[in-house]
Each structure stands twice: as C-alpha cells, then as structure tokens.
Image (tube, rainbow, N blue to C red; front, side):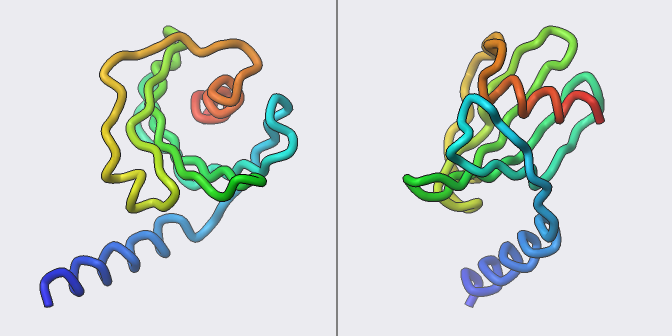
Length: 112
C-alpha cells in the first residue's frame, strides 16, 4: 500500500510539474526534438530538466549549470523521469562545448 501511495504521489507531482513542455531547437541534433520541462535554481546556478525524443526513443536529463563559468554536470539521466531521478549524478563539473546540446540547453537555462 505504501508503494502505491508513493507511486501515485510521484505520478501526480510529475503531471503537475511537467504540464508544459516548451520546444528547444538544437541544430547539432536536428533529427531529434528537445523540450524543456523545468528550469530551477537561482542564477548563476541553474538546473534544467529536458526531454529528448529521437529515433532511438525518449530520454530525460537533469543538468546543473554554473552560468558564470560556462560549466555543467548531469544530475540525472534516464528513459523515464523516474529513471532520471534514480540515476547517479556526475561528480565533477565540465566545460560546455560550443554548439553542443549542452550549450543550447544552457543558453536557455542561464537567460531566465
């Protein structure tokens, strides 16, 4: 019963939190569709959750950006939001490569 209640709460939270997906064009991965589900945190440290849909399926990612230093790390990754939340975060920050997927996502996350 406890698992059911937790699953129901997660489902309700997910539906409420990610009710809107705004599209994001990624020229370096033009065959896939990207959507930003959530941007959080206080500038210059921002978190962003994205959804990528491509020929190989759907993937969710949560990233942390240091907007002042142009670096980021993955906080989670997975085929579902649940998998993303359970995955291990990167330990270290890494520089964001120009014109990469992380660059385009970071530009959007850091401007808000």
